[in-house]
Image 1 (cartoon, rainbow, N blue to C red):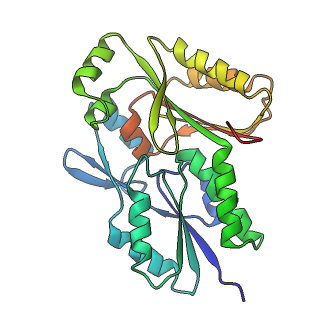
Image 2 (cartoon, one colour; image 1 turned 120 degrees about the vertical axis):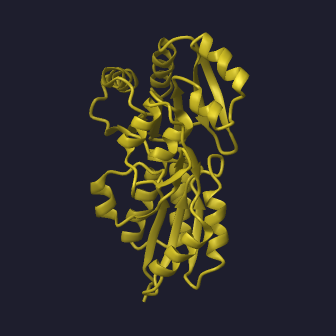
Length: 284
């Protein structure tokens, strides 16, 4: 008899409540600290509540799950003899994947850890694909290969409206943050396999629109088959404008526009927009 496989992922993922239920996804929460108080993502702080903290000028910090929490979850999920497939946030953004791997050696449960090299809806694309593969009876090697193939068709760009959170998090120097605020600099970063890189800079939101126009052109010969705009509460009208700019006449393409997780909000700050695409072929 084939051993059952259960999926574990982290709370940076962007899944709907319906998807969580349909695919039986298990979530290990990441933590957020605000003014010395620790909150557990999805348990005692909501996405809207974190928006409220940001608007009040309270800047959170993030932390990965404790090693013991991973071991505890592995033990719990494997108690019935199941193995665990842990698909985690990119190591570029967090040490969570490394912790998941270390914990895998501290449990009797059979655990396979995948570094998604992704997050948010990009992570969800891989998790959903894995869940469907498990239901279809595919083995772990086939599932790992499928996740990698999904990753190669996924692009994640983040349109950052202000650098406050990046400065507070130490990813941008305070002097650079002050100077760029004075000229109202807008920055677009791209999540790569080894780094988070700035790809576009500009002085107004027209920078974001132009980027989305170029993105649409890029995909003329490699159609987008799924789009997510995971955001930190910008104007709804602007989100719709970007969606129409990217998809054009392809309004039938599935799209998801939702607040991103508190973990991502902590790094990107207010009004940020994650543009996440899944294309038909590898996105070179």
